[in-house]
Amino acid sequence: MEFRHLGRSGLMVSEISYGNWITHGSQVEEDAAHACVRAALDEGVTTFDTADVYAGTRAEEVLGRALKGVRRESLEIFTKVYWPTGPGRNDRGLSRKHIMESVNGSLRRLGTDYVDLYQAHRFDVETPLEETLRAFDDLVRQGKVLYVGVSEWNADQIAQALKIADSMGFDRLVSNQPQYSMLWRVIEAEVVPLSEREGLGQIVWSPIAQGVLTGKYLPGQPPPSGSRATDSTGSGFIDRLMRDEVLSRVQELRPIASDHGLTMAQLAVAWVLQNPNVSSAIVGASRPEQIRDNVKASGVKLGADALRTIDDILGPVVERDPAKTVSPSSRP
Ligand SMILES: NC(=O)c1ccc[n+]([C@@H]2O[C@H](COP(=O)([O-])OP(=O)(O)OC[C@H]3O[C@@H](n4cnc5c(N)ncnc54)[C@H](OP(=O)(O)O)[C@@H]3O)[C@@H](O)[C@H]2O)c1
Image 1 (cartoon, rainbow, N blue to C red):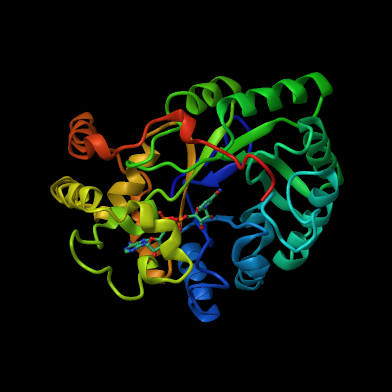
Image 2 (image 1 turned 90 degrees about the vertical axis):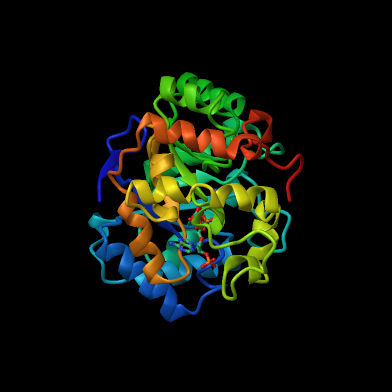
């Protein structure tokens, strides 16, 4: 496993992280979740990503139990706040009240005194940015959070936050967590150039497009049983990618993977890691052999020819519009 700095911060993260959305506390049983975490640790993954909202807060509990007994200083644990964690109108968003309450819940569920990175899961249009950033800064000073970042914020929102942090002397954002894969490149035009200038690193999610880039979903055929596309929660998220136009182009990537001695999943993860602004690719896995497969993408170099051929094959199914980075227009 190779390691990178999280943006311009001093924190090192494994360039492949393990995330537990959809899986822990939901799609997979507790023993499978623990086996995936164990496999990740065995393969050198030190960075783990979760969120208060995953599986209605159960995902943090599962991750906490799975990491129990592992030396805390050898781990980087990331979580997030914004999406609803309860029925109340203050159980959501980025108000000082919800941030302070949610972080305490996350720490209790994860069984730790601090998280390494605390991320605003989306932009909250109903809270003044200064209120959110001051609450984040207070958490850093209290030692409950070591670094702060955001997820799926657009370039304007990140720039506004940096301006406020600089003028108020608040701790600066060190990272953004966007969706990024061969199929979804909306951060390249605006978010990445700003982040490079300002020292934020991207911790990218769904680098395998939720399993689509493994090539296991074949055009015109039903999805394999036990896959995300057949899961009651997961299918709602992967559906937009399950179009024959996408699936058939993905099959055409097979020769590139085999020319490099890679599996399709490894090619997909290696592709996002070619972008130097990416600090880590967060992979998901419903079984340990997937994580063992995916981590072998660490350190792989893809040549310019391969990158060009990938662009030619995927062509019109690649999404590049920066306007696709959107947060809800009111609190969920
Ligand atoms: N910030 C955000 O808003 C946000 C949003 C989404 C995700 N995330 C983060 O990103 C993490 C990863 O997202 P993701 O799970 O969508 O990532 P992903 O790595 O693109 O997809 C993971 C899924 O693909 C399938 N898969 C993975 N490796 C495979 C292999 N080698 N062979 C066959 N199938 C394989 C598995 O699903 P099946 O076995 O079920 O098919 C696995 O659960 C999340 O856990 C979370 O931490 C963040």
